[in-house]
Image (cartoon, rainbow, N blue to C red; front, top):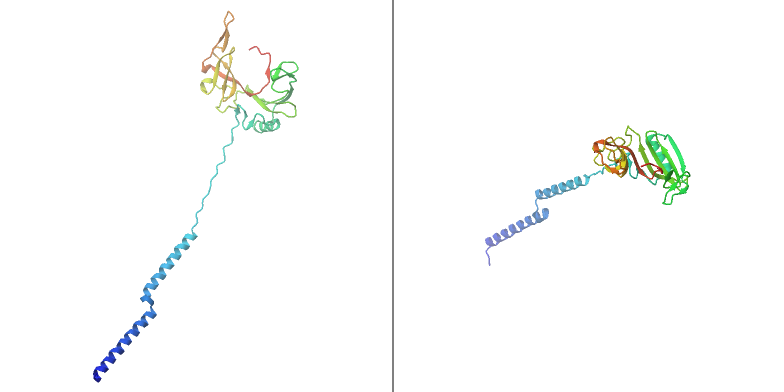
Length: 257
């Protein structure tokens, strides 16, 4: 049996242990898992910073713009298939209106009839002097030297068929290679000129357009005393353009060359 003093000491030690355990239990209840207030605030700051970043990203927008370039207008040039944007086959009224917008009112406007078939796909005037590709025709001309040719089966349904250009020393109209009336062959290597011709007049092409050219030097064609015909090709510096044409045009049937 324990003595009284020892029994009292054991009771005091047991009481002290109970008090210590109670204090520890109280701390865990206030700060679960031992989390300190400082650690809890640091976590709160991190959450706020993340929210701020997300808000900034959401408010940032990227804009883009697309720039479109309008195509350059087509130049008003003489072409192998028309003039400027006006093409062979377009209705006569549309073409005449377009040419008038660019060049002003025409100086002459003549309707023609080609009633006689020539037997090879063309048609002739009643006197047989002029031939054309259609039985009805119309020629509209400007004083500086351009004529537009229209044709069809009936006078009321004509279309753009060809053009001629000559006698214009001002060079009002040009081909895509800038060749015009008075252009010298030596200045335009794109020109092609053939040997032979009608005395000082020969022929050539540029950009698909047919040219009549003239030589100031050796003739394109000449005859010997015995009557033999000789073809020549003059020097390019001596050859200039005097006439240009494209498409279907009226043809004089009794030329001497």
